[in-house]
Length: 424
Image (cartoon, rainbow, N blue to C red):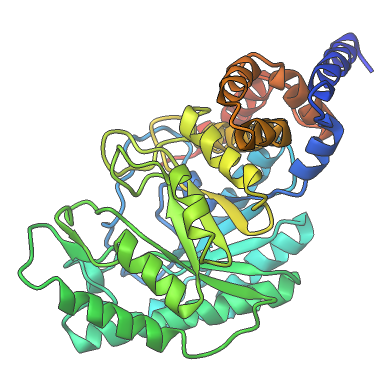
């Protein structure tokens, strides 16, 4: 053990004593954190392009800006890049795939013809590396949804195409879950909507409901897969009306016994998803989070260690929801090193969870119930200066990943050795 590592341990022991004064066991917090995996999204590594070889992907539905060198051009490159990122992120985490990341070996396979066999290499990789997979059908970026509609399209043939895609996605998710021996969350996000204000807001939602009901007719074991519905404020070119809005998606999830997905970048800039968690979990068994960062408008920026991220994790821990909330990330930035973006956002997400686990919630709750709001406020403010970073550094050391910014030199070296040699 070198002097730097000894210093990390020494500082941690001092921090441990400080937290213990309030009844917080930092070792127990670290153990609990190890049991809170983050489902890290695949699409940061290749700008949401995917690897389907069907000649159909038309872009649209998402907007990735920037042209930083080193985009993963193949699934093998994406896997290698993600492995590099994981080496910098403490803990044991998951990987979230979209349907367009199918590996069809040069064959043209339409999205309504996808099968589990096109994800066998992903499953084999996950087994080898001990990485569990989650899944997402892909309704955007396709000529059949270029007009802004998929499951709610007024064209019956178009709806049937996407209904079949949804069914295929569920079959694939069930296959993944069974192969990996644990649940695969299958997240449904539909970008459907209008650029300008529509006259009829009801009919598209009626068609969306009917389509989803048809997709979910087949019952799969909850042991292997669970479906989740994700809401949206608006999409690019669909600013005035979103079919699967917050109200629609939440109501559908509640009435159909599905998970509901809250995305931090899918609400009005003045709305915070942390304020919604405890309300939704009064009525919904489980919740899926897409931790993201909106800037001024509905968007997906690299997650930073800001107040909202900390508030999200506080709500999960304060409510005792760790087993009912599945945490995932969702952002994309092609203006910076893509592997670094993975690392930055994921480390911040895990760090915020650790800080929440180190809070003396029981003491604060006692103050609150006793009406001693003075002590509650005073302690909350003083806690802001407590040495959370010392515990974080120790956690990184124990998980054998770089402490503090030391990870950046590893990623920069990977950029020189690997990423810089790729042609975008």
